[in-house]
View (cartoon, rainbow over the protein chains, first blue to last red):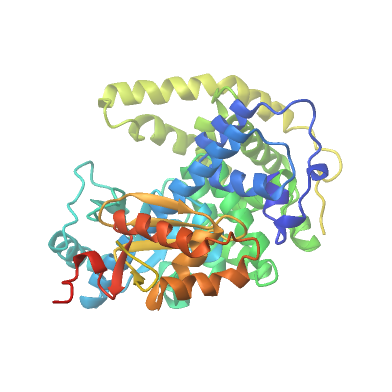
Length: 378
Length: 105
């Protein structure tokens, strides 16, 4: 349904487009849409379809959509104020993630949890001073190597302002070329607000780079699907693969695109399909991990196993995985209300719980999958 | 009270977004945090509230866009705008409401 609903002409989507088997479990549909934070997108798809949706279900989805739009309007107003404060201090800033997704993708149907802004490393103190003066207090918590978090100051926006001064991912060895991202970024209007946003390929790769951190979130996959669907004629695929390789995230990029093609029907050129085909044992393992992580998110009720492991194994150099897992077990994050020992225990238990599924997948990946795995290139 | 001669403008503390299709739009009061959904007619009215038109002008401009609109469209528009006014989503541009203006000597 998402695939059909995200087509450029959603009005053409009809009931017959969805091969529904049996009755729709609307409770499950609402729960999964809410959990995956894609209720506004599902609402758009439902509206575009001729599915016989119960009135109360449609009303629930409508409220989710309206609330998302209202929250985003508040965020946008806050973003405008923050960017003006930065401009007054001559502080360059790139808007990415949530609001940038509005620019490249699905505008107001995508809920922005935080406002994410990239600044130069040398501007951290100046930004802090500007934000404190403008009424944005620093949120107390452990010092993060990549960003600082400030509480929203607006009357209506109680979200978080996340100021990033580094976007590398040392745990997984992803190394985006930050200076090149700055050089390629451009001033745009995001729903009326002037903001600097990353160039299209950078934006796609930065979004893909977030997938592990967000446990292969369906919401992020839908974001990427939306960008690919909307900008497919503009995407420089060769350039994207080259850049992904130089950012040391080619395994992740190929797996993400494969998932989008096979699970969400993303329309990409035939040569892209060839480039993301599983080519060996690790490819099959990576795709199995991503597939299962998505299945677990869409399952009702929710029982996560692979979801806890998925962030740490799809890397360019598989030899790094044991060290990544060890670091995660010893130093990883967890619920802030838990103590260090509790957090470590929690991490170890979730990892142990996933082991049987991982072992099964490791064995299954020994067998080459037949054909192209159901891919339908255009 | 407002009447057919009153000109109404949008409150600048309100952020609005059109949802497209047959959905109308969402209005968010940035100070109170309250949000409101409006249908397509409500959105059409909202988009015309630049303070340059009287309510009678608004109704006249809306009628060809909504051929099925009832005869009492102007009254309905007035009632809708009164509602928006009470929620501080719009402001009176001019003339000032008659009830609050000093009467002739």
